[in-house]
Image (cartoon, rainbow, N blue to C red):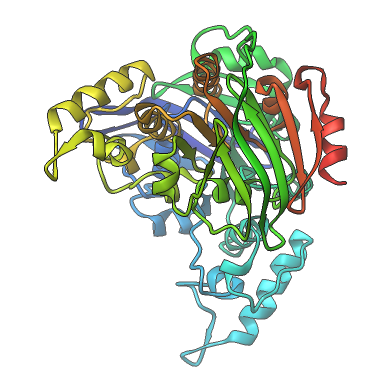
Length: 496
């Protein structure tokens, strides 16, 4: 087997877009039964290379070999026929169809010209049995949890008899238990000689599940090593091109009086009698397991959902917030958990997205003052190092990290007194994370009150001054000194 050709080789792949050289002669190799971690900062070219592999993009130069044979992949159908399955960060499922219907969509099992539902159900049940999970075959995918939807995507890949599976940020919305189950499935795939390309910004996972690491930076290869020959700091340095001595910037907090006060907030079973205070200059972390009620709580504060009870005060003044518009006018900004669906208008330019919450200030007589809008956006783009070809670029074409920076820019321009960061670094590389952490520290130093929701416990411990833990809609505990806390303390409160 050692003399066998790699399962997959991508040689000298070149791809460009208007104004952007995305890939500069990239090489990648994947062997049978191997998990290859594919790393790089947002915008490094990882997604572009995987879209070339998936047939969504056609390379301008280079070759793709599968099992040692040159295999042109000029469409997604070519890719599927070659045994490649790509599980994107945003799932490709039809929400109204069942798991069975999604698995066989476009490849229905037929008999005498009719779809054989019985055979499809039997095959789907066998696939889920192989994965060791029990999925309701008749439930529409919109009713499944994120973890279950992920398993449907994996079952689709297995149904294709895929030999190469790409997983792009597969654990972004999973609990620790679900992550461990996913890793068990990946290990089983390895035992069946399936090669897995694993993309993640969670470096702890890379050391747990991968065999080898390939790193991309600015569209070019910068390194490839077995996982056993790499340290965490070496991995970060390869990704960002510089040494990061600390993943979390140090800061001496200067905490003032109460800025945001929440009393008895309630909405059904999702949020039950939540009370807390955030002070000027403080970063308060709101954490807990997925479904604990963290996002639901801040949506009530922001007026995105109607609260059944509770009081909200800013600087001691009671607020009757009934809509996001009223929350913004009161000095509250929310960086949503899902930047693509809730934080940005993906079809519009980054300049237009920047201007949306600032239109009152940037318009006169019903017309936008375009010159001022462009000038302000350019200033924040420079301050935040937003990588864009120009200010009119579509927000949907940016990498995740740059999309997050555009969302940040629009709220910074609004000059909110209270900023809520819901999973601020989800799907973002370590270099961009550090820049966002620095910005959060600067905002706190300027007297802003910051609420940070995060599922990553190292991030909670590294950034927060104080920690509130939620479970089933309630605050189950408070850790007053986050810097002395441990992950075990947080987890004990999270499962209380």
